[in-house]
Length: 385
Ligand code: HEC
Image 1 (cartoon, rainbow, N blue to C red):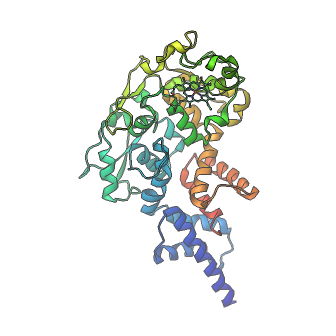
Image 2: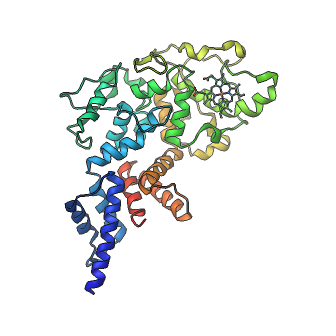
Image 3: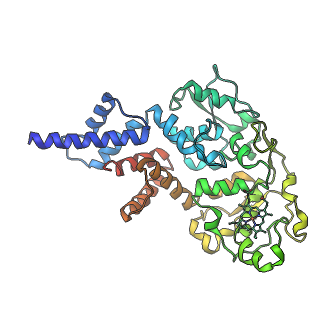
């Protein structure tokens, strides 16, 4: 009997180690492992559900600074630049995701709330609309962003001066603006939001059966002199994307591509010039008059993204469009898949993995979209491999 207990304990110890490593990104100390084992009840003298015990043990790893400073930072950084590299400085986008996860807030707010996380004032450069130095300093300090005295929640409008109705979570952070409002036509902000928060690039949502009435003037209706290309290809993305990206009509980035300088610009009720460039490509195309967006993809094949029937599917500006995306089933599934990949170190592949993903989505919703639930659920599921 003693022998079995020892083996069970060894197995549990391995599992606890693995759960901690995967969540915190750094190894557990002996004291932390002992605390986890005490919860996991390795000797099994209390007959309880072992997954529930493992989950309670995994929650201890959420207190590690590694979870915030390493795991989350590395997971989120690629979402904040076009190159999708994780080798970039902490910024206001990354810090805001980290803060929302730490505070167990409704994670959907990431795309629409008037929220930003900043470092506590002290030796750091002050937050600036024109520079990322505040976050460079915060990262260099090595301070634990899991500590509410280190990373503090603020209303974004109070920090950046952007009017509250124009804030849309991370979409209106300096880092997102620098990466996705720079140059171009603001469609990049839509594309990268779709990739990073809905786990889909435009190739996967193409639908040539939508009405093309909101496609902007810059999209030729007969590329290379052939209107069939427009009908069979261009419409697939632009019919749905252009009326959604209209939500960003009042936003611009002041700086030049490839430079660090610049800040978010917002011109209430005034459409940015970039929405009217190359209007001669097709003069009868749609000329953007305001920031009214409509989701044409609520109908047709993209209804499968699971839009919230409690929302109208149209509105004005980035905030309501961010909510449209964040309240979809695809958003919840995407967060779960990203965490699964981060914690289990592989994509969900087997049928067991896929049913695990569904149950994690259910738990995510039931926890009012608390991302911590997703991390601990994933750690429990993968603790044996
Ligand atoms: C798979 C989706 C997709 C298809 C199909 C597509 N586009 Fe686009 N298009 C985009 C995206 C995304 C952008 C924004 C690019 C960026 O800024 O990152 C864009 C931007 C543009 C722009 C603005 C210039 C720019 O680079 O920002 C024009 C003009 C354009 N597309 C024309 C066309 C034409 C003409 C066709 C058909 C031949 C077409 N597109 C087909 C997704 C698509």
